[in-house]
Length: 393
Image 1 (tube, rainbow, N blue to C red):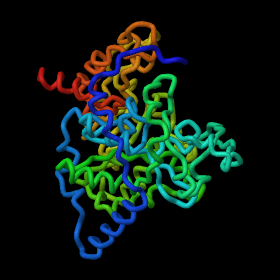
Image 2 (tube, rainbow, N blue to C red):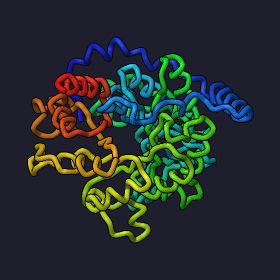
Image 3 (cartoon, rainbow, N blue to C red):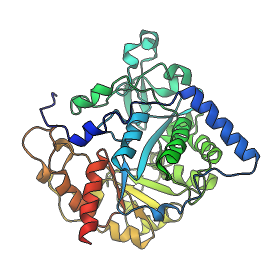
Image 4 (cartoon, one colour):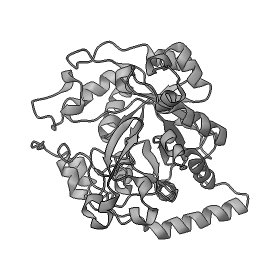
């Protein structure tokens, strides 16, 4: 697919250099670890976690999806920093492990489309086919690389046909570890004078546990090291597998969010455990009460909030927002994107699937349902839509 011509918002030009500077990974990591160890030894707590908790966040909360994936290659320090520059309240990370047990930020363990691994002849033999959560995938996978090996790769745009302009930044950043992100967030917090909120997802936790690379214990250890393990810490912990959030709830007090896919789907840990419940069962009052027994929120697909009809147009909102709020759960649905190809049919403009549609119109419909926040590849767009909503209240 070839991206059609469209004008780039001026704001992107103004902020174009926002992600240009990257932490020196090894230096920052070593320094941050030493600082954490020193403060822990002294019985002191780090600044994160001293805030007022997730209820103090603006509503609706705008979550930079994989950073600012609409403008920069996803899950890079440049994408994360750009999301903050655009005003995002929270920045998302997805976590997968390396062979030697380090947590790194990638949407998937298959790094074929998000790094230049295919251009490295020394790793050609690592290409393989694996079955992850019931799906066969062919490519290169993080669990087959040490961190040192992974650091020789460079990140690139995942969907270049749709976001051709993002390819300008291909090769600019490496794959960050989650510890590097924690250090980065502290430094950004000091620079910006506020806590930097993170929304952290465990990816395929049952799969990785079967490989001896359990995510939750590694994540909890890092959260404790950097003081983000408390109920009021500036972090959300999310997963599509409820058992991962249950496991984390026993390790740390940070608020958990259960992610919910299509109504007819089943969480993979349910499949493995023989639990017959589907997402449709989990969004009933009974299912939501069960989630509320160990989590503080849900992250449903937007279609669970407002379903689409057969033509792809938005229909009538469900009762999910009301029912979840009745159980004390917040809702952070996913994912808003500006391009026609991702928008409901009634908010598309023209015939170019890569052009921007009526993103504000679609956001207005979603935000009016009373959701507490939204994941967005375009945080600046979502923030303007949120401002429109609050101005009318």
